[in-house]
Length: 387
Image (cartoon, rainbow, N blue to C red; front, top):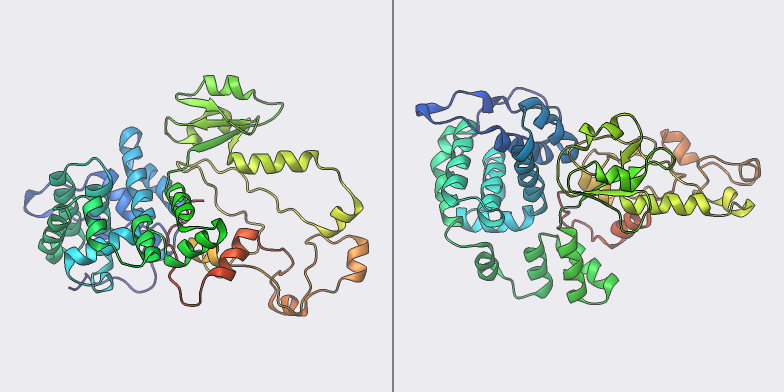
């Protein structure tokens, strides 16, 4: 199967696929904007190593998708990315070929179609027909192939497919059922003490996170703020949290626009509150550092990108970012990012960092170091980072 020729050079992250604007053949209806936006976001993640929570809001704005259609596109995008491992296993059997033998545009479209069939309350006819139209606009010669594959997928529900494909090894089976690589399943089981506990954590990891807002102290009362928002409630743990359950774009909330509130996970709010009340000592000020929180960037997603001040991994891929650890070399001691007079006098600068122009002074988060240490060499990585 051959895809249409592309121009030279990589396509910028989040760039629209020009093949989607071709007029539909045979008088067929055009692709609906919500599914088009979802395809573009999923394709950008796999093709350009883009961040879905940065690409999707722009696509929704550019296509004018709002309200329920925007919610549909958001669930279709993030759900497809979360379930890619499981979807690929099912589609490969239905197609009777390995996923790497399917053209990338067709492969992403089949993932979107399979997610609608297996994980959403979308009628089989609508899911198949719209995905076939999408494939026809991308690779016209593959429309029949996509139709046959999705019809096979639609013959069974998700539970039946998982039972049919269930491996004998319990870790492989958990990886298939929860759409996580095996090395993550084993790391969870090691950390939690049993595979049963690990599967509960994997289930929680696949849940769509709610949007948490922070009502800035002294500027906005959380209870009064929540009363002005549809389907909002105060947080359970942080006294500043407002939880959005009604969906929508936080960027359109006036209090966020004028700076009285911002998007911030409730857990990070607790960390900030704890640091604000922690006593300051000479030992902690000289021997520990704290990276600043990223500036609030309202978007359809609850998550903000990594702060610009952290030492960046060598790639923009969320997969690389999850497994990357900026731990300094063994022969280079760690130093505070802002050394005091006492520490600068006794702590040498890493010559390796100075020669490369990069900083190796900020320690990696514990979760990043743990992931880097536990992940076996050459192991598969999960393609989506929701947090």
